[in-house]
Length: 68
Image 1 (cartoon, rainbow, N blue to C red):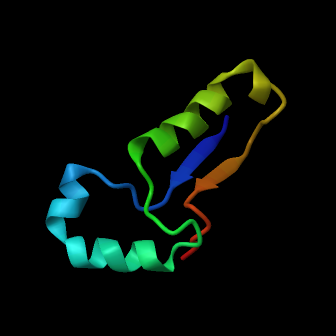
Image 2 (image 1 turned 90 degrees about the horizontal axis):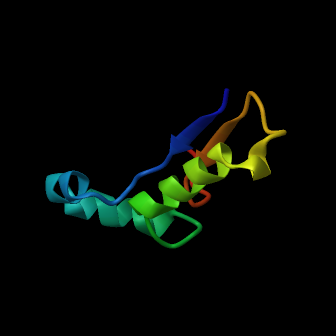
């Protein structure tokens, strides 16, 4: 079993709640932006693929390089 630990992901609900804070976090993120749903979906797709058949017991941080 593996887990995906997403960082801040841009969705309508998140950006509508506090756009200023969302932009501040993007500025601190080494990737230069917050995540998009497809960023997280790509990690999940990898873990579900044969390419990850030897990946077991991992928690993968999909955060664009930002750790809290």
